[in-house]
Image (cartoon, rainbow, N blue to C red; front, side, top):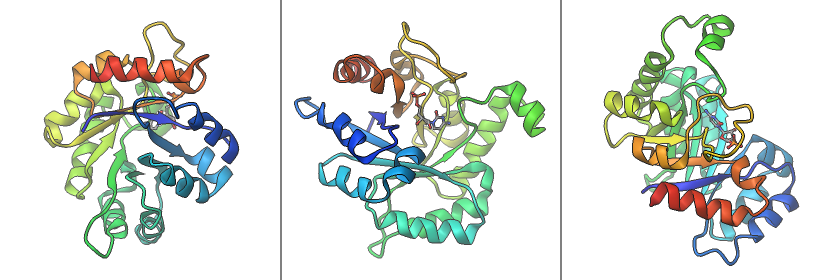
Length: 233
Ligand code: C5P
């Protein structure tokens, strides 16, 4: 099910909830992404409170550690009843399999699990010079997506510009969660591989993750609704 996810990138508990209060009159209850800044700043209680308010939650902590640590951490995150969470695909297939195992609840269900391929702030030049990865970025991303599929994950986080290549390699049902979204008339900030909500729809993203174009807008609810209408039509 396609949707717009708001990246709720605030440092504090109150600040995040004040932001979400603005959506009280909105016809849709936004799907919310809680990232490192908010989770580390406000603690797990912010997840419980946003869940109590009826939002779906993508807990974006991008785990990357040894498999045993990732498995045990995922057990903790699963008990917070989030709807989606993630790991770095560069942590290897074994680490991703451990994440799937850790997330599984006693009744067999689990939150959606997606893998970060390459951050949308990373260019091919940086990948080559800083990380010594020589292959073309599209090839690296398609390979990481295939690793994630083989490990039993549901999809990847990638730029919308890579969504088609990911689906071609990992299958049409393999989810693409795509940050790096900007309106045609807004600033790129630190993102490099970006596109508009309408273009992300055309390309076949399943979920778009939108932060500053909504959180920093003069009217965040209007910006959210614009995203929804451009992306979902
Ligand atoms: O403000 P902006 O729209 O750039 O926010 C994008 C959000 O998506 C941020 O919370 C960022 O951490 C996250 N993200 C990303 N690129 C990835 C994975 C996550 O920008 N590859």
